[in-house]
Image (cartoon, rainbow, N blue to C red; front, side, top):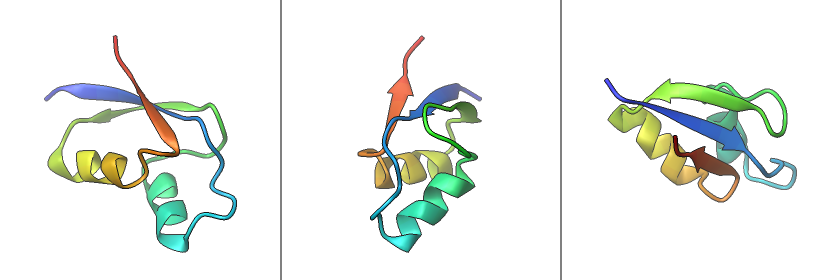
Length: 59
């Protein structure tokens, strides 16, 4: 399966609780952290939900 690298670029302060939970579920613990995930439909949906807080890094 294909993998994608995702970087959190904005804070979750003042974000709704469901968006905070999505960021946590993606594996982010702090700002500017990069995580690598498989590009499953579930992960891509989570990325789409918080696309204003993260950045997908292309290789």
